[in-house]
Image (cartoon, rainbow, N blue to C red; front, side, top):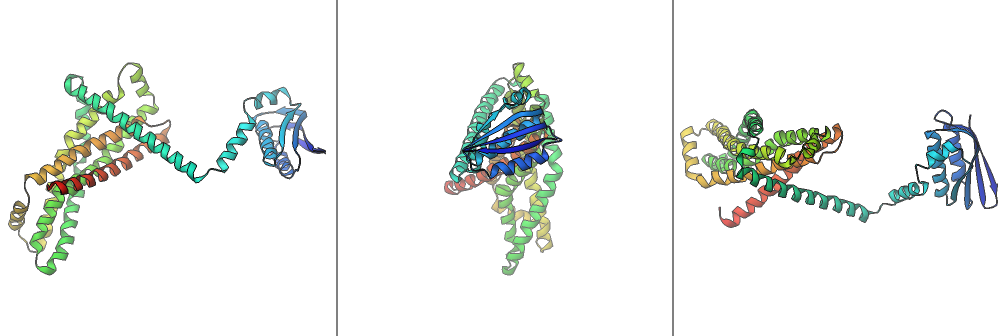
Length: 370
């Protein structure tokens, strides 16, 4: 079993180790030697290995840690008479750099953290702008040469993002119309103005809630799916293989998804608008308003611009959902956890951008009188 001896000599202390330094024998000596070195008051510490019989990676880790403990106590540290095996293992590391890293991590200041956060945000913005430029260029090339588009993949993606999303869009849109109409009718019933609930439901659903909720649902379904699919391809090095073969990953993988999403989201939005209005109609009938009166009130308050306003926003929302999903997938790191993080990041980023863009549209439409 290994042991140690601490020998002071003036301003110098020698730590002599002997025996085997392996994973099975260093537990006690590591703890005891560290405690002894932490309490020294010397300018120099020499770790002597003349009597070391064997040293594996665990023993090398102990030697490095003992050197760091001595340096933390304010002493200069050096190794002496180490066996060749230990020297080879320690040669893989620079103890001085290890100490510097630990000290730097311990005194991280708030403005350093702000700088790191700003650096990450800047890198995200640069990556986003770079992807937008590549995607726009790829879309222009694809539209100029439609034969180069992978229409089979685009149709498959459109079916998964559109047709397969109808059940959840139906449920959420119906409940949205019901809740909105019920809450408004409960308040307006005090003034005998239940009929005007149709105006509120019609305008809110067509201009705001229909496109917004459809885009958020699409971000949760398709955006996460795009990120997970491309992230898995990135982990399996399939994207690297495409690049090696001369294929542009953005044009080959992202363009069909963007085109498919932009194609289906207006139809999903119209469908969501219709289901939301039906939900409002059912609530109004429960408050004694006939279906004909509800329909006539909608015709009186709504016009084509309300529908087109929501559809125009939905097109941009579709680009955001598909673009962010593909970007996060292409940025995925290695491992299953990286794929999960890319899918989560795709959903969160897309929803934040959708809400921000919707707020920007609201301000623009207000000042434009639309």
